Image (tube, rainbow, N blue to C red; front, side):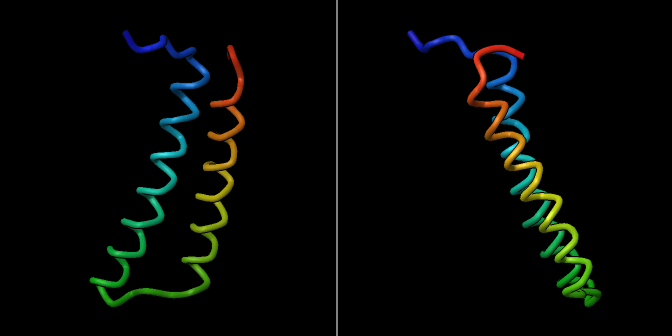
Length: 64
């Protein structure tokens, strides 16, 4: 049987997944619409990396 995860671990895992999806779909959406700009992509990338890092920290904690 699988080991039960704490709330913080599940939230951390979700944050990590969401940050990757936001980064990928933002780049795809702006590229398809022809509105891709490196400056806005940089801002989104920095925020996504921050959320990813927060997810890693939360996933390492035993409880929230």
